[in-house]
Length: 513
Image 1 (cartoon, rainbow, N blue to C red):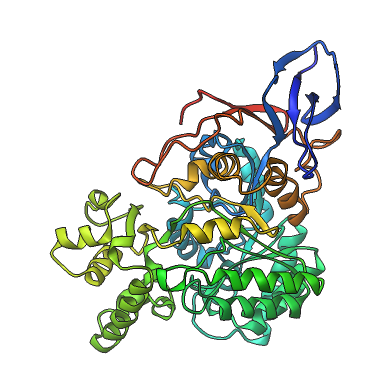
Image 2: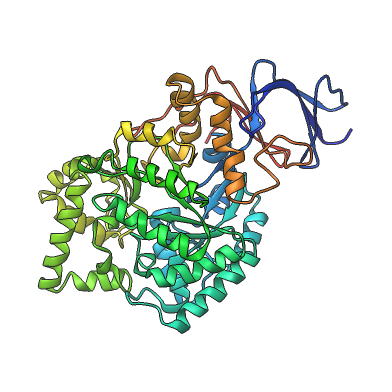
């Protein structure tokens, strides 16, 4: 008997946005072999009666670069129905890199994807992807190239404009990565050294991306008071380069800015009418998560962590950093809105801070909130990760209803991580689609399968069609939901029954982290 599986009598949502139909799906040799009615085959049979079968979910923004080596089962990924993870986000990817900048890159990656126990063995994007394959990852990884990583390879972490020769070198390196399978470029314009890029530099590199039919995915330069200006900067890059664009985790941070995302949605309507291919991803939560160092002005990290720590020794420079940090913290809602999520490395025991809000940590340390930020950054080599409770639920729902929307986790694994890393997709389908009726289920399935596959040019997945990859999710729509919280985030969702990746059963309900 061949290694095949026949899923019978499931309610099939095929990823196109069309109405569902009841049928059978035969998978084998990694592919969907047949789709039809009353199929018979001498193989394992899975009864899908009353359950929904959809293409595997595609996570458009993740930080799972090192998970295949640390946690190859990747249950926090496949356990929520994700079969493809897009990595290399926020302007930082683990490749390409050279020996001279390897240590610096590894340190920069810690707040996003964790600390590696040994130096990265790869140097090119192609080598990284081959190492992922060798590790037997539980889900597919698809890579973007971080603009900050490109910059680091050519000019380190210096805060200066790239020369013509430097831009030429970055373009050549980007072209090489695209030919090795990268799907585009990411910008993290609040993260050094990606934040040091000029429009001229971004347009030049994105022309290379466009020539290879790639996509720009960008964390804009500002998600607070200057949200619209930051968006328009990237519109100019999109128009100047001709590349398709996706805005990462669209939101407006801080109560004084809530509602301004409506302006972005209106502009997307206008740009779409002009013929531009533009969209965004979103995690379905009212809090975000990233490194603590985003509360420090980007210029303070020019040259890396050592230079930042040196600048704090100069009283005048430190005073300016403190002043700007106070302003950034206020925009984010102050310490009551900042929760410590992870301390990847530290010179003293700071694990006790994980799960606490910054105002409480400052109280325990007997110092003001800004001083507590510097205290933690200096003892963790700036690797601490936080959850920022500063997004409006009304904004979350308004953004989600847009036709330009797809779902992401932006998942960062840590001690008390953001719960999005474990249950964003079931939360979207359960809370927002089923319970709140944000959109029809067939539309929702399209937003997490067929549409992200189109954006990433992943023509072998995202739909239930004969000959496509057998990336499939069988779930119980009546039960699907997130079960975790900001206090207890490390819990798998309910209702995801079985997940196949390239025809291999990678998860079934009851499997444990």
